[in-house]
Image 1 (cartoon, one colour):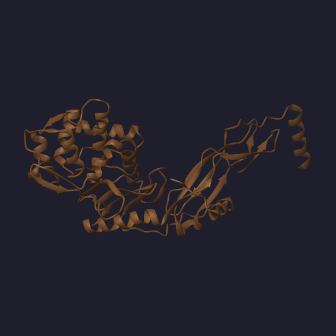
Image 2 (cartoon, rainbow, N blue to C red):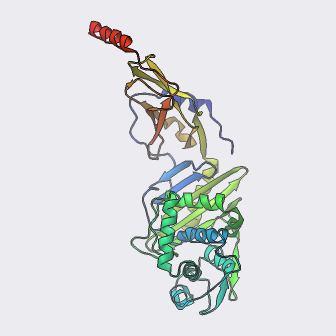
Length: 383
């Protein structure tokens, strides 16, 4: 994806290196969802968020991580798509046809291939399929859920605590909307050989055909994943992804009141993700943001530069609300190139404030004894 840096945003970013950051502003874009996020998949840049960092109940969106655990097991050679797992009474009773929950309609005591179970998890949202896979890989669903939590935290999804493989309500079963978006991004980027399962529109098992619950499939051109979720505790939610040209967006919604509202808001949010939001470059890597005063140095100032390209994801009408500020104190010499000497505060409407470290562009040697004495004398005379 090519990210362009508009002149208007460049001028604004340079001009607003002021000592005061305005109070946090809300974005001009709104959604009915209590929890929502729009993410650019290629960069992981958050374009929009609404209460996205607080852990909440994810319902069946949990199954994205359940599937990832299976994908890893296949890659590591512990199982194959043709490995068969037996349907236990526990899986049949708690996730089968008589459970009243989403089910693949597995038969008690039958043996089922991993590939079919994955389709049951991803397309049919089968709780029975999840439990069979969990028991097959870890011996029990509880042990599998512990593995899920450990795996998630290892890869940086810090908000995750999962107590089951299905998303069944549990007071400690939580993940943030932000981490759900990151989880979706991982599925797309790290498991391309399996990702096409998320775009399959239906699957038939035990003579029962079930359609994919994702409302974006067939309604939004380019949509190809990922997973819906619903319980009375969580409300209606979705992790969705779509591609348009070289761009891919990920959206997450949770806490909506009805299936219809989820469908309408999903299409609305994904449309906005491409049409109303953009990723804008603020600074190039190694670009100077400002200069920092140096005490007792061979130079009186040193440039503070940013180490990596810096982007802002913004609702286009909100671009004028972007605020930046360089914050620093006088730094004593000696200074080595690359030392952190300041920070850039980036305030984007509707998002948490970002703090970016700035580093010294070059070495600054400490003055010798004579130089320090002369500078001290100048200070005293000046006083």
